[in-house]
View 1 (cartoon, rainbow, N blue to C red):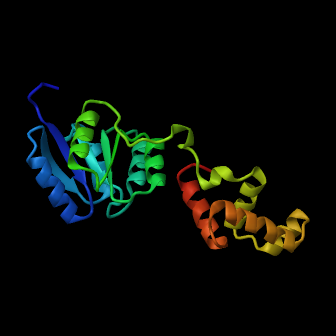
View 2 (view 1 turned 180 degrees about the vertical axis):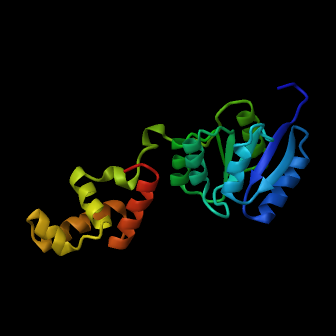
View 3 (view 1 turned 120 degrees about the horizontal axis):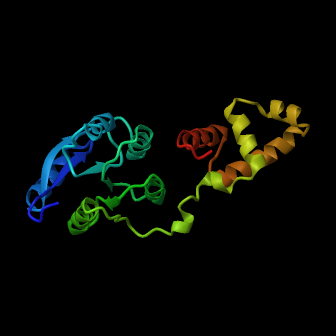
Length: 211
């Protein structure tokens, strides 16, 4: 890119106040041009799929009006779309950062970071580098599901299929009390309180292709 050209930035964020504040900061920095904003993930995907992209990088809030940024990145992979992304999260949840790294994000910042960190991240990503907070890469794939044994995964799968404790006991040849014991261990490993929460967690991980 020529030395004097500006990096074109597209904002994806559902909160108008965040868009206004971020847009104001971008407009005051002569390294960048704000080319627009979208509130929905589908709108961003349409912009990213244009034959001639109108932006050099996009800054996406974690929660858009119709999906989260993880779903956006997953859909980009499915459609073979390529865009330089910086996730701008207001949620200090390490699981979100891990998910973004697994999905190949190039940049990640928190909304409470110093603005200088955000703009340094913009420049790094626009220049083809990766800029994310420190993360122990050996633990990127650590999820509650990764702590389960094969038998526990099978048990969770039949729970998701709607099996009752009695059905599980009958079909596996163990007592209902033993089934309850295994379920308690399963809930403890997943850090959930009941069957519904366990099934919801399983469904989420399955949708992300991790089970």
